[in-house]
Image (cartoon, rainbow, N blue to C red; front, side):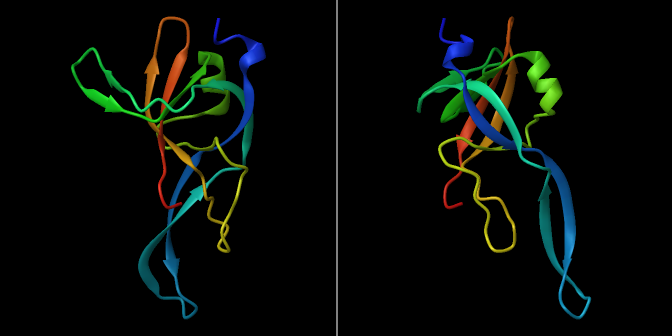
Length: 127
């Protein structure tokens, strides 16, 4: 019952595009990388409240996460979300002076369940 359409809210996600080398004003490579993200993807989903719990995977791996998001497989495929996707969950989209997104959650793990896909989210600190 908690995954009914009426319980879904709008969120924003950004898919990871890749990294490029940063060059200074003289054209020299500085060794720094610039991370690129795609356009904002607005979608509706059910996101749990802050959990602070631990999940034990079937393989025995312990996964700590802050929130979980429930999507259908079709949504996951349509939006292209993967383990490099970042989200604006508890705040509006915000960017710094270099147009770097100041997102508040990133994907910790994507778990495929019987009827849906669960995305385990990790809170990003100092972003």
